[in-house]
Length: 278
Image (cartoon, rainbow, N blue to C red; front, side, top):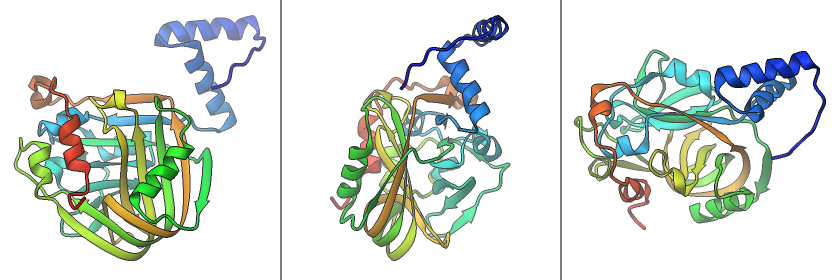
């Protein structure tokens, strides 16, 4: 973050103060928004539907339409009602990877229970001739992050010698995430060109977000994908951006309003996200 000083005409200063008071927000936010619009440089803000704690407790009801989600971001990931597959949002299009392996574009009037998106434009990039494991990918992304307390988005375009993914199967309403993950479908794809859509969230966000790294894969031919468990790449370009702001849209369903979400979801999330062969 940078600090600047400048002189403003009285009329603009008064308008700035009025905007801060009306929106109950900071001077930093108003000025950053205005500069973003004037300079055509998008602010990187996360938009999230529901919380990870709600997923852990089995709240998979539809909360927000895909059309609204895409108004807030063109890059991200999530899931669908009753955990029916994995969501990949890439280049402004929402895809569903189903447990039978099929990939399809999602209608914009469809309701979804959980997703996280942003408007992606790389602030930093790095090329890698080889990434021999998911651990190496994580290490590379770690080296590009400047803080443990901000949110990051990572896009990895590459030629993958192998990608291991998992896709959730639909479950009965109320099934907890840990139980649902035990029935996931796994796939191994070889010699694929595609993209990893990734987000990193700080540990303090664990009550409402998936802390650490979360990657979904989508092949260039839009025929293969899923939540990434392991991967190897011969060529890869990692681009990333940092996000200082987050907007969470909470469901208004009766199930969510009455749910007990006080339990720490960390252990169940870790169990659901991990590679079960490791």
